[in-house]
Length: 118
Image 1 (tube, one colour):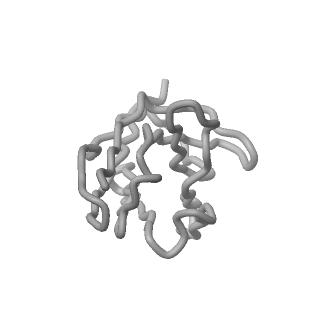
Image 2 (cartoon, one colour):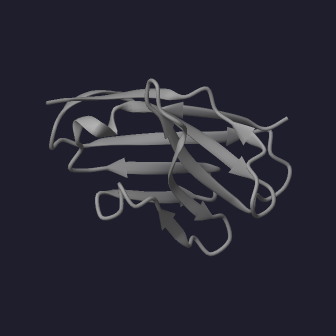
């Protein structure tokens, strides 16, 4: 069973930076992709970023493009989300997800809280 553990969340002032990590364990196969989603109170879950495990192609949601950067460490089975120029509207619980096949996410982490103060 694949387990995803996020870390790196916290409280930061607007304009600041945070780096989230997501470590995958129990994997006996290569994923198709991994992604970050976020959900703020009272709002629907929002796609943030994704990275293809093979090749490292990245994709970003419109609201974070140019400010967030997703990367991966294949040897460590870990993905990262570098978040710069943070805004109060980035406040949410951030979830890591693992996709075995294109179009669906099969495993999810427990989430890590990111709070951006104005």
